[in-house]
Length: 249
Image (cartoon, rainbow, N blue to C red; front, side, top):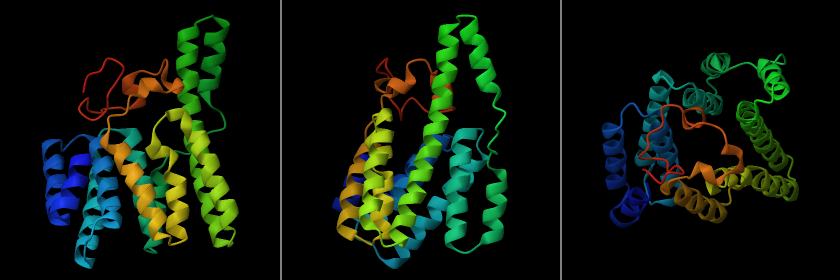
C-alpha cells in the first residue's frame, strides 16, 4: 500500500485509484485486503491533491468495497465493514439503513460462555487452551474500550473541551499499544483532529497511519497474540498482507 500512496504523490490520484482497483481485482475475495483498500481510499483524499469528483468517487468505491466485505465469509471483517457502513449512513442521515446494519451486528451478551470455558480449562490445568481463550476475550474487550474512547473523545470536542479530547487520544494510544501497531494507536487522534478540522494534524497523523498500513504487521510482536491462532486473529486473511512469526508473506 505504500507503493500506492507514493504513486499517488508522484503521478496523482488517478494512477493511485487504478492501482487500488488492480489490487482488488487480484484479490477479490480477501476481506482483509478489501477493508484495507477501503481505508486507503478514504485516507488518500486527505493527503493527496484531488478534486470534488475524485473525492466522491473514492468514497463511493470505498463503500462498495465495504459492501463486498459484508458478503465475504469472514465474520470479523464483515462486522467491521457493517460498522463502517452504518457510520456512513448515520453521517448521511440515512437512519433506516443505519438501523438495519446495526441490527446485524452482534449483541453484547452478559452470559458469556467463554468465561465458563476458561474457568473449566483453568480447573483442568489446560493452560494453553485457557490462555488462548483469555487472549481472544481480552482482544474483543480492548476493541470495545477503543470504540468507547473514540466516541468519548469526539463528544469532548463537541463540548469544546479540546484538552480533554487530546488526553483521551493519548490514553487510547497507550491502551492500543498492546497491539504494537501504529495504525490502531493513532485512530482516536485522527478522529479528534478531524472533528477539530485541524488539517495539518490530520495530514501528519494520516501519513503515520498509512505508513503503518504499508508495512506487514507481525502479530507475534504483540503480547496479546502468544496463543491466538492465525485464523482466529484474522480469519481468511492473506499471507501476502500480514507477516507472521515465521517470516512468510
